[in-house]
Length: 435
Image (cartoon, rainbow, N blue to C red; front, side, top):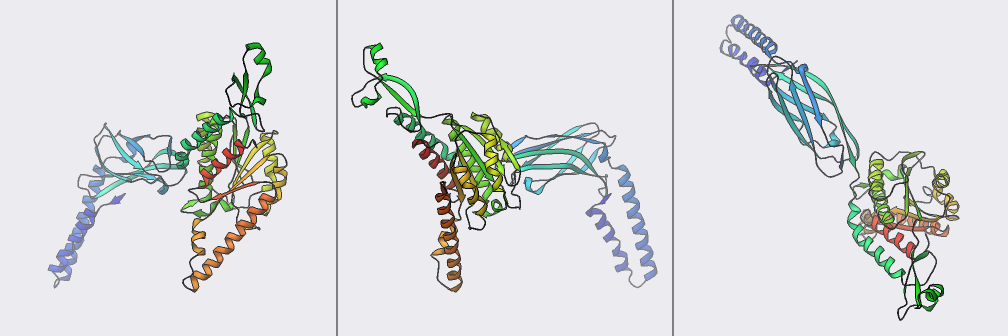
């Protein structure tokens, strides 16, 4: 049961006799007592005449998935199965992170009829956003007292990573096509495979002439080559404690997702096979054996519910996880953070095992604000801040140099720049035949 503001106002009116009859205390309090009794009686009658909220059945219509930053619509269909009309409010109890613009709705639901109310959702966090119940408050004709009940109406919507780095994909695909076209007229080299035969054109390298085909066709024929396809790309996303840090108002883990999605889309178009795992001390998400549009769909679905775990990543198990995926030579991309020698000791200790068999690319997010603070030395506080920023940059440089000495490629960048930088390094490795 609930009371309305009308009932409170009705009780407040009972204080009027006390003020007017201030000299006659007995008469004033008798009048106040009679007013209270009347108000309670009216409230009871109003409550008995209110429609039953428990007789309302609810159906929910929701999209299954929505990208972070995009609006979604939640529809509730209310059916009054009682004998009285229901007048009141409905509250859809979404999680705060679902970003419901409006959660309370005034409804008038006659007996036996159906109404729909809609709420706009603007989620601001990835993962499963859930709702379990709908609260219904039904007032009587006088609007004094109300019946209230929570009706079970579960629903969920999966909020997927936004994939903002998609804007870099067309330019990288154009560079990939240029790479294929340029390589097809060059001689055979490391990282290339036979493409086709064509007629000799003045300026072609004579070493690419296929003499057998020339003898059969009675004209000079040359072989063309293209970058090798069907290479393996294994993306390992660090979901440990360091991935929880926020840079430019975005967790490191979300930036890693953006880089992984862009690289997967590009490598899939290049004809390579992509495998993705999110790892700290156990596998949080895994995508294997998918190609084309299905690959990105599976990736965003699997990564949507992955959140940083506040524990140290077990890097010693990563080589075994890579061996489980493939025994062939592959490009292993480690999306993690390179900050201090202490926090990166585990990663540096396993790099020799990976670089011995694979091409390893370590990608790390850096805070652009750190570079800006180095030059700000107007007062004592800024000078100490600049010294701390310089120390942080030196640590990053030391760890990056140590990773390169172990044979790994290192890419660093801000959250806005890192996905494109990883894609560019992939294209450079492919052009050099190092995949």
